[in-house]
Image 1 (cartoon, rainbow over the protein chains, first blue to last red):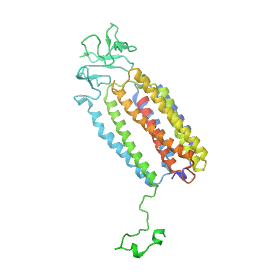
Image 2 (spheres, rainbow over the protein chains, first blue to last red):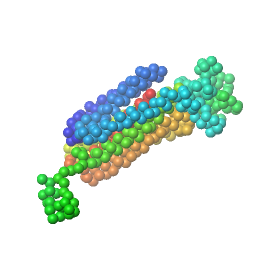
Image 3 (cartoon, rainbow over the protein chains, first blue to last red):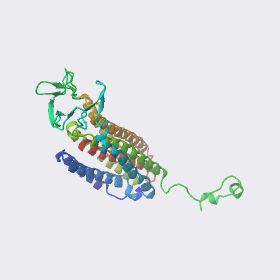
Image 4 (tube, each protein chain N blue to C red):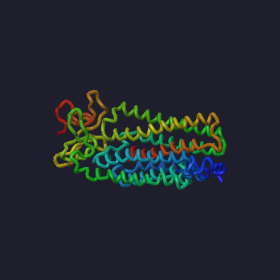
Length: 180
Length: 209
């Protein structure tokens, strides 16, 4: 029980502080492309901090068996939820409408823009890691279509080298082209 | 022997008459309030699991996902994360203060926690206004819809936590809590730490990964 919760809160606080600083530094300086290293490190920091809060600030380390038993099933249920949704990720490529496709009320169709799967069945444009508007050409190579600009009055978010303008959904302005 | 058994009257309590008397407590060996709050927190874990799980499905299923650092103010939010962690520490200090009978300390540490929690909410609201002003609304794409769903629901929890702490603070001002009577401070603190814990995970998932 918390009456017997003898721990130094300052020590836990300083540890959390240092871990957060280290985590932010890890997130900033680790290349975004190296996902395994970036995500692995970040998750270790996050769970470490979460565990400190859970065990000490929330006194779980000092609680009796009833409170421990109350919270014990939740990691199992969390695992069940994660495993239950895993097939949606694993079979994403087989779906008729992959995750990331969105209904466009203007066109009245489902379009793959922004965070699309890149499936060639769905002609698409998307925003690349550098913020450029990109698309895949006939050979499947990713090419830059236009560069981002501060949003203009006509709704243009990207302007190509040849002057073509696109809204933030990748639709060309002043023309019928929607990338299809 | 319990008082109930000591006052047992066969003429009234014997079987066949009205009701039997049992010399045990059928409740769990933990305070009911603490039992309830942990049960509630377990359901809250599942609530956020639903949100985070959905986010992970969308995120892992998408071939392209923008680098959050290009869209979000990571530095300001990192500072806000520090604020929330500090508020957790001040709530711990508040509980320790009243456990040692320091009523003034309880008022001060709780008041500081409320200020820090309100500051966190204020920064988040400011962030929302900035994003919306730049056209980053929830209907723009999946990045923004998942961002607003997760941070928004967490923000609501922080608001509830601040209100909870405010109620405790008013009680503390009136001298309601003592070194023997501090359970409500502990329960409010548990909720506040939980909100902090969830933010630690959300900050990593949404802003850094």
